[in-house]
Length: 69
Image (cartoon, rainbow, N blue to C red):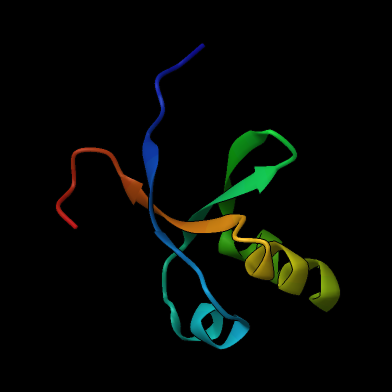
């Protein structure tokens, strides 16, 4: 198994905030696992799925390990 390249940084708190953010990578909780996910995949989800993930606190901005915040 390879080392993680990204870490959780800041939670996304609303759909409006998600629209304003210009980050490409996010960390999303799927059940009890966390997965690094590209913004385009999240946008392609149905609106209600994205809203449920955001309201459930399951989406964070991904910060590349070793880069300053």
